[in-house]
Length: 293
Image (cartoon, rainbow, N blue to C red; front, side, top):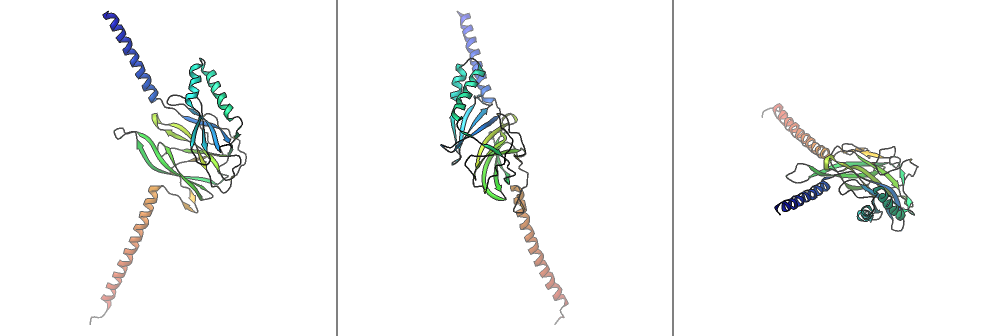
């Protein structure tokens, strides 16, 4: 009886250990997130795209959308829907094929977005570091960093948005896509290190950019698949330390702008002090030269 009890206890302990191990493994696994296959749905004026998330729970392909009017994201075909097929089908590749077919059935009648050359559209992006956020006060590890991105066309400010990254030296790569029927609005694909766990993983997202003066739709031979965006002749790769020129003035980093402002104030004070000292010296020299009454 004691042997059976020990055996049951041992089995339960092993089972609990495995559950804890699996839970920890699932919580700590990181990976990149890629998006691709951009389609336009005119019925709700949204761009649909497939997301491949290789981190966390390891979801099968997910279909999401972003509204061109509000920039809000929506899940169209969820991870849970795909997992039902994944767990019911014995063969993984067969399950993924079934999931892909269901997603393709949804977007089959939608129109493709066309990649464009951002430089030919005279689009430039000024990136500024704002702050970093730690995992916790006790853990000296960066959870994410916040950047401010100001987007210009022909030196005219179009918008200012907040972006998430990991460190101040990382590159941010942007690709542009024109939307059928829209002459002054595009979407930007951002590919950068956004998941900072385990040294950082690529995290891709879509941004809506409106209010443009025009859109140059010259053909660009480029296809984005379920992998990281590769820089090409139409993309922009931006660093925080880049200085772009707007209306003849270089856009300096925030800390340099503060230094420049202080320097100008100091120069003004020095100039004023010089005038006062010069005036006083002049008075003293004049008094020393006047005859004593």
